[in-house]
Image (tube, rainbow, N blue to C red; front, top):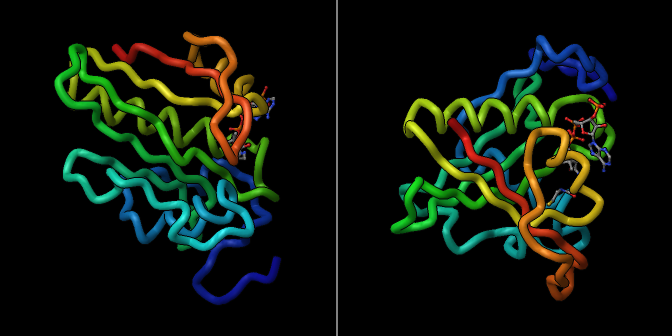
Length: 160
Ligand SMILES: CC(C)(COP(=O)(O)OP(=O)(O)OC[C@H]1O[C@@H](n2cnc3c(N)ncnc32)[C@H](O)[C@@H]1OP(=O)(O)O)[C@@H](O)C(=O)NCCC(=O)NCCS
C-alpha cells in the first residue's frame, strides 16, 4: 500500500503504532460497512442506537487510518451494566494481526473506568467465535440464524 505524506504505512504491523480510542461514528462507519455489509450501501451498516448518548464507538488507528472498529450499545435497565458489542471488524488485509484483540481489550478497559462490574455480550458470527473465545467470551446460546447474515452464537463476558 502506498504511503502518503503524514500517514503511516498500513503494511506496518507493529502494534506499538496502533492507537485505540473512543471514536466518532463517522470515523468507523466506512470500515464497518466495508467489512460487515460488503457490497451493500453504507446506510445498511447503521445501527438504530448509533447516535444514542450511551453508545460508545471505538476505533484502532494507524496514523489517520482506522484499521479496526467496534461499537458498544448500552442495554437499558440492566444490572450489572450490560452492553451489546456490535460492528466488530478489522480491515481485511490486516486481520489476524492482533488489532482486533487490542481494540476490544481497550474497550473493556474503558468500561472498567465507568463500572465496577459490567457485562459485554454479542451475537458472534460462527467464524468469529474463536476470536471472542480467545478473549474470554463464552457461548451462552445454541447456534441461531440471523437472516441475510448467517449462523451466530450468543457470547458474553463479565468485565471486572
Ligand atoms: C473477527 C475479527 C474482528 C477479528 O479481528 P482481528 O483483528 O482479525 O483479530 P486478531 O488478529 O486480534 O485476533 C486475535 C486472536 O484471535 C484469532 N482469530 C481471529 N479471527 C479468527 C478466526 N476467524 N478464527 C480463528 N482464530 C481467529 C487470531 O488468530 C488471534 O489469535 P493468536 O493470538 O493466537 O494469533 C476480524 O477477523 C474480522 O473483521 N472478521 C470479519 C468481520 C467479522 O466477522 N466480524 C465479527 C462479527 S461477529
